Image (cartoon, rainbow, N blue to C red; front, side, top):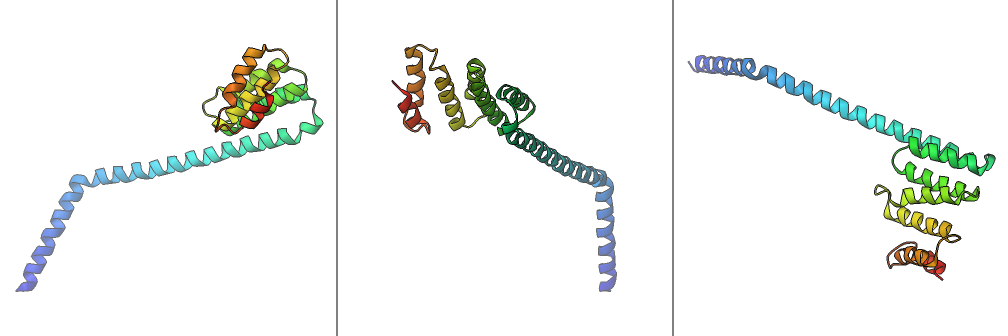
Length: 172
């Protein structure tokens, strides 16, 4: 007698589950498809980001290793193009290298512009922005009035700035 109740109870559970599946099954399948597509898209984005970073790294490293074989004015142009085509921290590093090469080539104005591009970029860490301001100030020493230089160096000589000792040593 209890077997019949168990069988009827089992049949009722089966019918309820089948009714739920008919009612909500396509939503569950849709949710699963969206979930799989979302995870796949995220993983693809991660892969692309890593591939881009590897490309930036390779390009930057080849430009750095070519420094000894290339004239400074050509090197400045190469690092400028690299900064335009790169992303992340390689933009700031390329700009700093561009400014250094421009300075060595005698293009003080180009060096100052490259340093200032780093100094005003909010995506660059504060220590590198401060370094760029200090290097730009050093480039401006020859032609800038003393008051302008003093203002720039006073900003950089504040406590907590990692370039404070250099800025203080440059002050007249």
